[in-house]
Image (cartoon, rainbow, N blue to C red; front, side, top):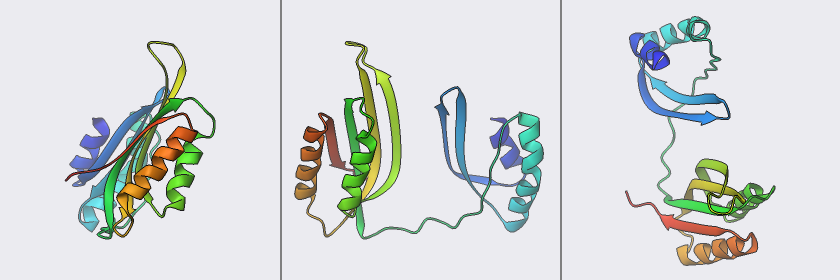
Length: 158
């Protein structure tokens, strides 16, 4: 809250914000917009804000994300027993299909029923419009079968 308040106080507008716990820490990725003066004030103030809040702050200027009209958004969910290369196999699959990973979140946990170690991957991917969705889905399900995983690949309806 204090970081977001400090951004607002200096004239920055929060465009996108993702805050998640990672281990015993909290990670925040924040995209801030504003006029050149507000962004300059914020950049100058960040080291002091980090000291005051006893946190680490890394900032970098970026350009707006380019729209991807030649892609369709799909949601991906994979749940499987913990295995070291699961995420690598899933990412290699999509890379080989010319599918872009737009967002990804992973989580290890113990099953509440069996105490077995489990792994969950959630993604938003961009599938080229010229790619046949059913063929991609069938190939993805074959990958999930090979990994002993449950998987889902469904279009995101806007």
